[in-house]
Length: 132
Image (tube, rainbow, N blue to C red; front, top):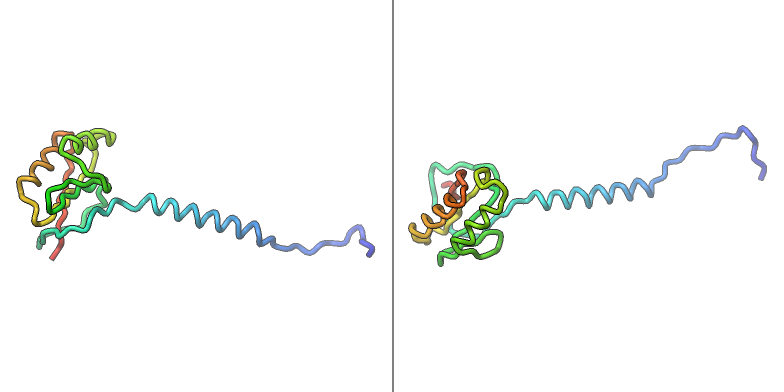
């Protein structure tokens, strides 16, 4: 087959590299989205409040289970360990803490956890409740 010197070729779109790029972007966005999901905490029976409001996503959720166990990011902590965790979280004064206590937790246990947060330097403390 003979080719002419000035013969023009038809342009074509290469689809294989475009598919590779799209798959790479898909994986990238999935990984970023997974990192953006906050700690949802545990499934607790929260007390109800008629004035409960939706707050921005907490930076740290402290869960107090029915038996009084303190859980943060699926790790159990005592009060001293909780204070160390909050102190090591960068600037404790800018750490946003949400305390989610089961409704069967004694009030004194809840106050001990709140005191531990304040001793560590956290000043932005929210309480979790179900809106009714």
